Image (cartoon, rainbow, N blue to C red; front, top):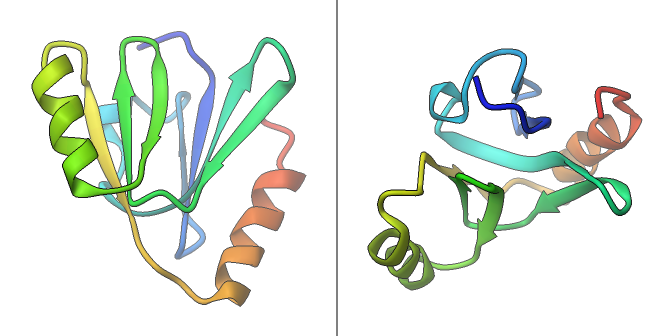
Length: 106
């Protein structure tokens, strides 16, 4: 398993972290928030992206299909996983973000 600390929060309330498996083993759709360990600020949240890519150096949010294709073409050997976000209601998103912020995993 990779050593970077991260956790994915899904719209249905499920989570998947580096303790559950490698990035490519995580569910592929309905990503709402990804929390990652950040040496400068402790933890950082990625959210409201259409796609999330896991490369050798960690998670990256991507906002459109064209950018996703560019990353795939330029970094095909380094990309380990691609996950997709889904649009949810503001209420549902706030609930997921609240859960992520209150989680002490990272």
